[in-house]
Image 1 (cartoon, helix red, strand yellow):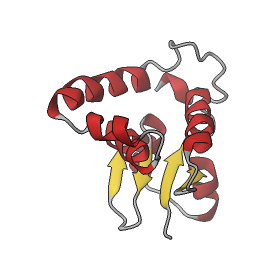
Image 2: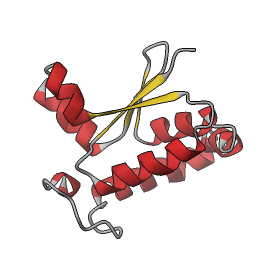
Image 3: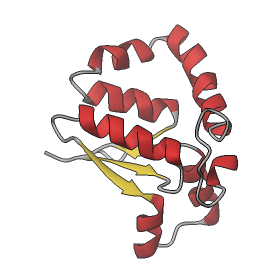
Length: 125
């Protein structure tokens, strides 16, 4: 079975907590978590793409389709048997209308949502 690749910023405590909790729920081991920092050790990314990954979670499904931010979270939920129903609900237009801005707000303000130990300032983006 091919896995989806989730790119995240290891310097962001909120990203680390998300990875921890989602990994516990990923009972079928469908997700491969790869830190932006590890990725850039082996390949060069354009500065703009690296900044985008620092700003929002990025996921590449087995077909190499990119899912970003709220869409990445929705995809992750749909891949987990324990969260599949929530993932389906997240696809509804009304849920997206609330979820997308909520995700962006949290991503933009993650240093204010109880996470205060960013290592390199990435949470202040």
